[in-house]
Length: 172
Image (cartoon, rainbow, N blue to C red):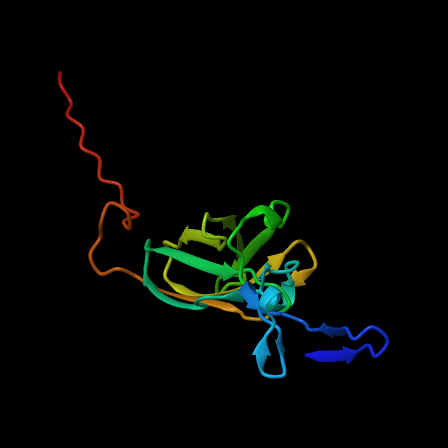
């Protein structure tokens, strides 16, 4: 906090920078005692989204084939404040580009959830190792890579089987 004394009229001017979102009560003390009329409530909201600070909650997955993967990205401002409202993200285009070990790629979109987290949910049915990157718009890439190891399920099921069994009865 920086305090500047004005000797002409006896006032003191103070300036400070709050960087953590939240509610604050500010009380002024003079010679060790609070100034009665000085209590003020201030609410600090997150600033503009700062793409370099966006982070992934979990970036490595080991799953069985056909299990759903949910990747969450937390949007934050310059001071790492997360958001409680989705209003600032209407136009933010976020995608995961996931490549298999043959360098074939798939694109998965992120949607903005009610909790202000971006989520991409998808299923992979082919076993193997997949790696990917998350892009915001066409230019910005989140530094942390995503990896998914898919293990083939040992017991075929309706969701994981690629064999179709069809019964047909012929009548004459």
